[in-house]
Amino acid sequence: MRYVKWAFWTTLILTIGSFLHYTLPQHDVVRVVGTYQERQDLNDWTRIFWSSPDDQSSTLVNRDVQFIQTIQTNGRPMVYRNEDTGWGWPPYFKFDTASLQTEADDLKSTAETPKWAVVTHYGWRNELISVFPNAVGIRLADGPDERIIPWFNIFFFVALLLLAFLLRKMWLQFRERMIDPALADAGEAWDSVEARAETAKKEARGFFGRTRAWINTWRAKK
Image (cartoon, rainbow, N blue to C red; front, side, top):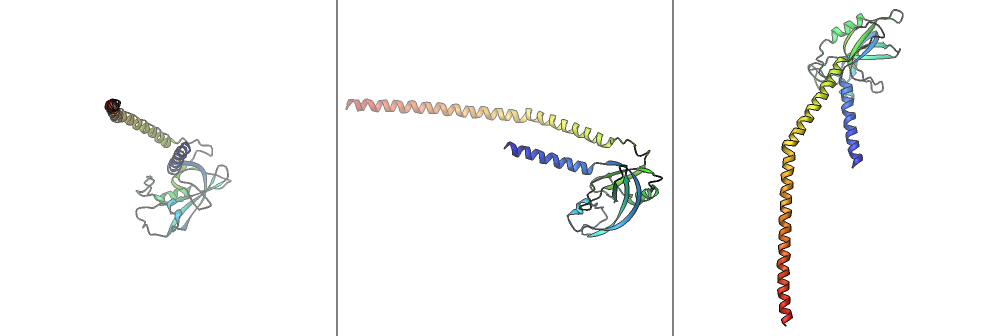
């Protein structure tokens, strides 16, 4: 049973951690080298990694998606998709795909004269199944070594810890006021039932003992 418990909690923590890692904003310092538009098929299970704006039909099997090509500070390529999120999930309320693509075009540079930019995005990059993070913002960086502090994520986790603390306090108070007294009353009621049962058992033994003794006296007279 211990292994089942650990497996359950491990699976739960990994699921929540993966969900938060995919959804929360991340920041990359990159050099924009190009932008393009390409038609993408949406008719398989990887559809979950593409946005679903409010103006898009759920039966749509393919559509044109804009992409931003970049080079990271370590020299490795990174490609971002540029899609509106609309009012859906995750709640970035992004409606400025065209403007973001224009800003990315304006930040293009070469290796000889680099122009570094900070791309804010969510999601993952997986070349095997063609999954791309979605860029939600871009700005000019101070340089390739710019230090970015993820203030939103910090505030989010602090708020999450405070919420968990408050929920735990509420649960402990609810348990102290409602559950523990009910369990105590149930325990007392059970003890009372057991006591009455034991008393009845003793009385029955006494009755049968007296009856048996009386019968034995008649047997002795015979």
